[in-house]
Image (cartoon, rainbow, N blue to C red; front, side, top):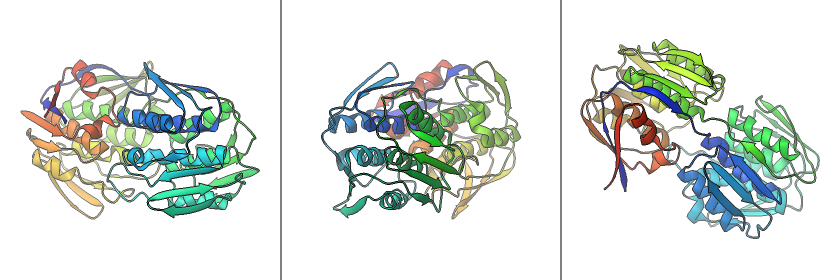
Length: 417
């Protein structure tokens, strides 16, 4: 199993290129199921989750080829309508094949999803929506078994916005008979990116990016030709890295407008952010200022940046209060940060982070994707050497992280243990 070994204390400086967004690429790959033909998706990051999704489609009978950040998927020979436990357990986003399969083929058998252990994240909203569209849904031996001759448009309402639920039902609706309205839809940029790709394919979608999305079903779609948007969470992570190391990093290929809530809070910490051509320059201070945050659905502060922001606050001047409202188990990184000398206490969904002047290297363990990123952020500031175990979590969401960090002057190496 690989580990990352980081010698901290260096001021990082230079230019880094942001990869395509994992959370945009995965639903786009799933959307290729909707059409019979060759789909081309550019700026697809070279990640473990992308490879898992490729295996899943290959298992279904599609041809999946990936090279140089380009995925080419030919879905015309799909003949297996099952997404097995062995693949789905590795990645929660596998459930995104459910909507496209039942929309195009009228049937699907999908294992209940796995992924990071950061909370329950139930998919009942996906299933309730499909049932309202006329699908028959059964749960049997850990599998979702869905069938419908053809889905029908329906009025759907989410009690809580769900990104994968919005994406799954939007993909299901594009080939349904009639019009589907999704109320209280997720508003994330990745949802908009998927909608734009579906519109290129011939779908009729209005309102993506707002709380109400209207989809008028069509009889067929043409193949995807699309470029994935930049990863806003990777962008935010490198901003936090600039902040914690007092660095000066030009972050290229990012869309700053997708990170407004985070940008406001980072500026409050004293991080200098100035727009440059095709990106942003992030300039850190000797020590950040303490700032309170509360996560919220987009356009609020992103839960996927909470752990990295906590790492930044661990060395801030003063005490910050961090409230997590999205996932109930998303403070698992706290104990690992404390091993490095962070002073953090928490109860329920709220953590108090009392900034310390120094962090010290230690052996720590990643518990989920964003927790692993927070440990990297902290290790880059810590005195001495930090060894991060179970970095397969990091590899699920960050492309060539150690290479990018080393290009900025960090001392990071990967070893097998």
